[in-house]
Amino acid sequence: GIQVEQSPPDLILQEGANSTLRCNFSDSVNNLQWFHQNPWGQLINLFYIPSGTKQNGRLSATTVATERYSLLYISSSQTTDSGVYFCAVESQTGANNLFFGTGTRLTVIP
Amino acid sequence: DAGVTQSPTHLIKTRGQHVTLRCSPISGHKSVSWYQQVLGQGPQFIFQYYEKEERGRGNFPDRFSARQFPNYSSELNVNALLLGDSALYLCASSGLGLAGVNTEAFFGQGTRLTVV
Image (cartoon, rainbow over all chains, first blue to last red; front, top):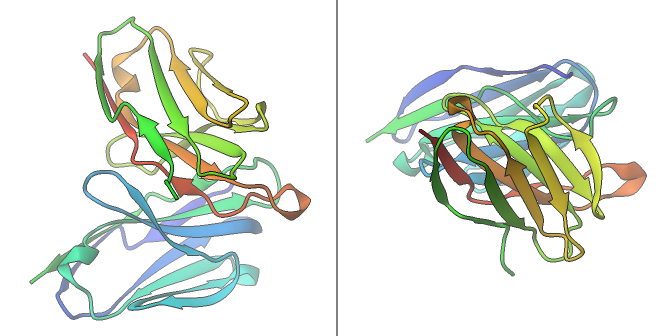
C-alpha cells in the first residue's frame, strides 16, 4: 500500500513559537487529511486538503500533490496545541481507505 | 447534529472472549470504517462498509468481522480475543463523492479495549 512518512517524529516548542510539520506520501492521492489527536484519543479534523492551501485561524496547510507532500503550519503555538498530529491519505489506486502516518508528537511548554 | 458516536468507551475482556463494538455515523453519511490504533502508532484500517456492503478490508485475521445495518450504524466483532488486540478502536463516518472517492472522514471518540 501507499507509504506515509511524517517528520519530525517529536517536536518541543516554547509557547508562542511557530512550527512546520511535514507529510510525504508515495503515490497519487484522492484525499489527504490532517488530524490532531488529543490525550483522550479523539481525532479532531484539522484540514481536508488533497491539494492547494487552506487556513483556519493559527493553522494552515498546503498540499503539493504533484510532488507528493503536505505541510501543516502552526503559528503562535499554545499549550492546548500539544498532542499528536496525523496525516492520513487515500490512494488513487488500490484501497479506498485512509493510510495514516506515524504522527508528530508536539509538546508546547509555557 | 450529533457527531460519530461509539459505544462502549472502555471495555475490559479476558483472553478467548469475544467483543462487540458499536458505531453510529453522522446523519446522512452512508459509509462507516473501522480502525485499530495500538499505543504509539497511527490508526490501521480494518473494514469499510457502504450501504451495508463491505467495501474494503485491511490485513486483519478472520477473527475480526463487521456489519452495517439499514440505519447505517455498524458493529465490529472480534472473536477469540488475544492480548495483542488491546487497542483503541476508532470508527469513521464519511460519504461517497464523485467517482467513488470518499468525502472527508470524521472519527468517533473510540473504544478503548483492554484484553487481560
